Length: 35
Image 1: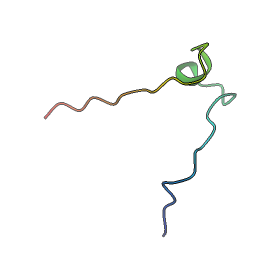
Image 2: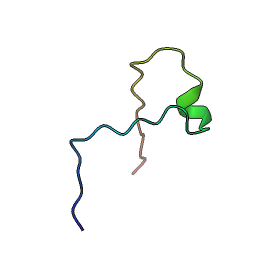
Image 3: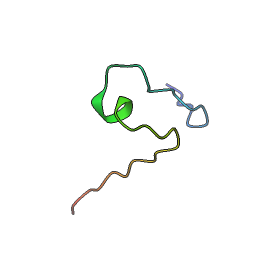
Image 4: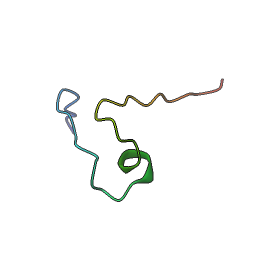
């Protein structure tokens, strides 16, 4: 299986609170992993 990490996937309009709530278009979310 090949993965395409260069294509941006539009996530607005997918009924996700995380992506549909921010009003700004250029929001970058950070994932925090505790080790």
